Image (tube, rainbow, N blue to C red; front, side, top):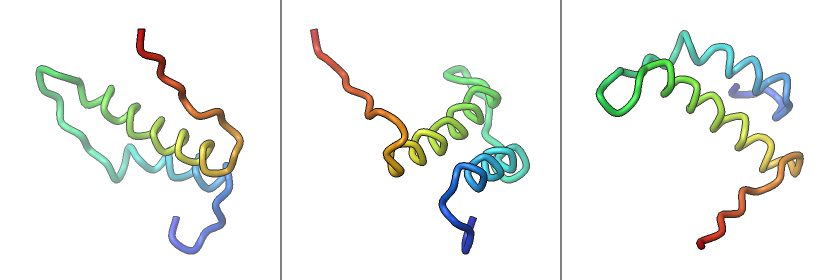
Length: 62
């Protein structure tokens, strides 16, 4: 992503490359597949929030 424009296409390409570059472990708390999906979603969410395309998550305490 270094030197590339901050666009949805760049982010989606990076998300696709996560499976090659990021190899999480499985343990009793989470599987490797879940951790990979969470990392991909965090990047996607970061892009949406920094470009104003997504709504910020609002947590209400009951």
